[in-house]
Amino acid sequence: MTTAVRMSADEIRRAELAAFLRSRRERISPEQVGLPAGGRRRTPGLRREEVAQLAGVGVTWYTWLEQGRDIHASEQVLIAIARTLQLDQHERSHLFTLAGAPEPPMEKDCKVVTPQIRAILDQLEPFPAAVQNARTDILAYNRTYDWLMDVGSVPVEERNSMLLAFTNPRWRARLRDWEDGLPRSVAQFRASMAEHVAEPGWKALVKRLRRESPEFEAIWNQHDVQPMRNLTKCFVHPEAGLLSFDYTHLWFGRRSEVRLTTYTPADSETAAKLAAR
Image (cartoon, rainbow, N blue to C red; front, side, top):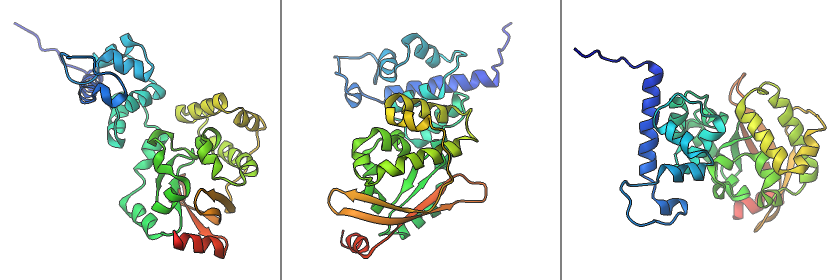
């Protein structure tokens, strides 16, 4: 007489994670990730070792993850795997849920950007407008903001205005007064982080900025803090030239950290350039 083995909730979740990872891996061809086809393959898609290599994790560790073993996957590793497997927003969220890990701020806050908010963004045309969270992840934007900052050319996981300002030369080139603006932005970011000091996503962002930008490291070590204010900001567009905007932050609720920032022309010349674009 055989005895049925009852799986625990965690075991079921890990089995689902393993099946999900295999299904996503098998739908990606080597050519899609820049690898040679390598002749005939017994199974479709990428091999486990290829996913591990592209994600920067150990082959044995990734194999265990696909086998449903009881191992812990950090937020950074899950983000790397999601990027390698080219998961969309909903698939990334599903991956974190199955892995038993808290959703990254960007994924969590993206759910706040409802169809109604996107309709507001569209109605604000031709004025630039964007939605960001406290960590400065860019969650949504309208066409004019994309024209102003070329957000669409940036991979989704890199769409963080703090990261772009310190590590992306093309982004910085559009910020005319970045020498004055960046210290203020870092001071505002530090003030916002006070409520998130133990969260992996925030710590990983600061660690990356300190590693990749000596300039950020120097400003960060000053420990300055500032509140967020509505000010004037100047941009240098590659085609339209100098543009000046008054920007206004509008929070989604009394306790919300997600905000809609609108940019209204600060002078008639900027207004004319927007109308003519």
